[in-house]
Length: 220
Image (cartoon, rainbow, N blue to C red; front, side, top):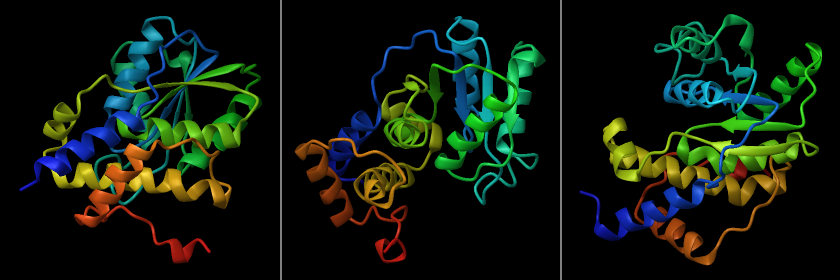
């Protein structure tokens, strides 16, 4: 049973993790690989709205996706895009990245290789990873403007789609921890975290929503 306070705190983190950017036309859309094919769907929808002339899907496999996406996250995303009507010529695949930093670095290298002049990127992720992806992308590719996007889902609807509220809250907490500790490690730029968000995070940690935290001892 999730307490009313924990649910309220999770909602605070959910809202904070989203950048609330208004989608606008960009040089390219980059869909970050994960277990969630919805990221591919959102990327395709934005492409079909004319928000980007080209899509890059990036991602290898992980323990979470090896069974569900055996050919690699980016490859499965591309297959989804083609099934939804995107022409083959409009989709590039970056199949090696295993974390967000590599997603950005390898996508950048791929676009440079094929000669795409990138001024702005529509960065598509899961809803609760928007801010983390944005902070990482700003670190890895500072001269480019990033516009964040994800599925326009309410917190309750996302929980219903995952069917595991504790796991979702754990993921929200883990994503917030990385925003706190990764800038000092050089993995992302530092973004301000309001006090009420920090307090919600601390309460959820105290309540035991910690399965997605990284050990800070391994980072020192």
